Length: 399
Image (cartoon, rainbow, N blue to C red):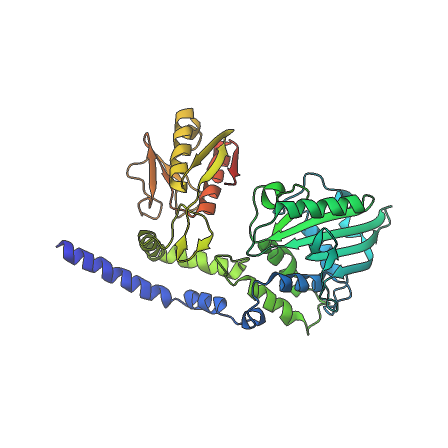
């Protein structure tokens, strides 16, 4: 009888898997991920120099895109976005406040369409992009603006380099409006944690995709001849490289959510099988090495107390114990979660998600259960969401 049940479950899974891969949404998703682009063809999808040349071209008002200074204005607007990490002190705060009234003149940016070399400062280094300009408006603001850009894709920011570049810019241009801008695939909780120096604006490629590149495509002055170049770059950001995917489109998000809602049992079964085979580890970092992922210690500060452990699952247990023993857990109506598919915490036994499935990796303490079936970064976000609901402080700690 047990053998027949197992056979039926296998048949059911296979049928559901066939149904999934036959879904029009799944086929569309495959098509999106497999779309050709020039960067991929020439093997330069994640070559930082190509990224800086492309963005330098866009930022140059004299570029063949015909957008004049619109891209620069739009980029500076990104620095005010809530998703951009702000420096400890913003020297150009007034300029950012008055952006709609600002006019830029004498803009020079390297690299650009005609000069591919980077600006090099002896004893300091080479800036991925360096921009200078004059700015003014009719409200009395005038002066010179300088921007140092650094881009990272598959390498970590160097804190010493970040400090050296910041010191040089602020020391050599003390009377100008200066900005230090870092572009990375992923951000920490603040600028200093992210790049090793607290004087930088930090933003990720997803924000660049959503708030700069996509709007550019709709600009009426955009040169139709170069529009395909921007489309190619947008496609390039979707290509995963060494575990890194720099941006995802709204269409991809909608398709992925719709597929998961309809076939969550198939996705979860595949995930469980991969965990069992140690192909992935729900408790480890997002950095892929070799065939699987390598575990690392993980830490966070909750309600002013530091918790550290060997993996996400153990960290969840430590935090759950504290929340229960301190009485904080009673502040939230249980079971509770942020989506219609899953709960984060419950006091029900057995712990069941809204979709009827049992908790995948339950962490239990004194009648309460946390779901710990998350990748490292997502797990920290879940703890942050829970702490916000409980109205207590949460801060991830880099280890």
